Length: 511
Image (cartoon, rainbow, N blue to C red; front, side):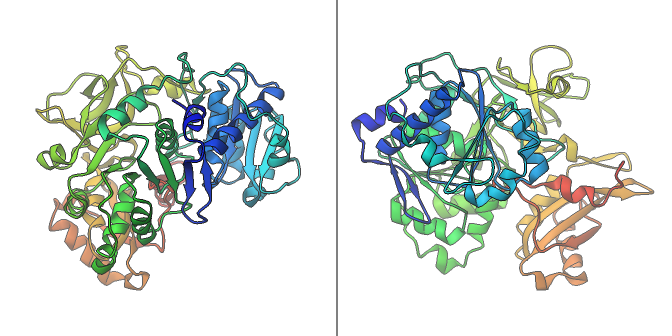
């Protein structure tokens, strides 16, 4: 289904509730707003396979913009509202957007890319206007609220978060199925998490990220209500679950950590009994953190491992995870292979590069070299996301780290995620990153950068305490030899750590 079908049956049902303002977008309005913009895009000359881009905060009409493009057979690129001029201009230009949509509160950066994005023919701004932009509201006001005549399914073309180098656009093939026919993600969500039209889905993350965008749109295909947080706050999150009777939600491990560090009396103050399914992905979850979440919320915690590329999907429920602590699941889409650098398969239990054999093809837009780099060197059609991991005898995958973050010290491979997982549960650690820094004798040494709770704790005493804490739980060579402190670590709003930005500070420009 899609919003038009839902609107015909239950027009006044909330499709979106904004958590901060309580503004409600009904299914009737979601349908009409998306139709108006679809007509505007057709009038501007965009046809199936063309491209739009939008940079918005978690705005009430964010999903209407996405649905307009999706119903028009277009590629649409949702862009982080935290980007600065250079990276924003790169994405808008690289994706080939003919239309760019933003909002007045982002006008400063939105207007700064005009000269660098000559391919954009129409610039629309919500909630105000700025130089070079047309008022979104005025532009769509006279457009029909009925569907365009040639509706067809579009697809998102989203960019990697840029944790290593330039962000890269993942370009899938446009679906050929009718708009009313759901795709693979719909079937996975329906089969694993059992949502229905009465479900309430709480989305605490930025909608421009792949999982929040795709899951919100999928829940709307079901006719569910989506509650959107403008920004994550742990206690506010608990209050929203109680207030709206939330049944389903998706978080990232960093949010789990913040929830667990609330005072016990705060955690117990809210009724979470409506919650049937808490999904997490996007970043590694330390075993103790997940154990505590399952102990608190019960066996309703579900985990999956997948990427924007859509080339694989692994899944585990709480019961399987408790039997295989630390796993990210078993494959539900094709076969997982663990290979060495030459592409040879490794035995069960050995660490190597994780490849997916799913038959799904994708490309990094405009970057054939990057596309080739993630393909199986032996030409078997397998692809990788660049993660290191191992399989157990039952086929469960355990991720070790990203290949690009592996530390080689004295010829020994060290995976920094192990130390990060240990340090992240220390009561004085709010956030942590571990990576390699130059060492004349060993090549690299292990460094930790920590955001303490509170910053006043920072100093030699805490550094020694954290190193000792890590060494009491891991082999000494895997532990940091030094710890630096920061008031905040550079994280993507979805929880993904921009480790490259930290690491680059410690390496020469050509390092």
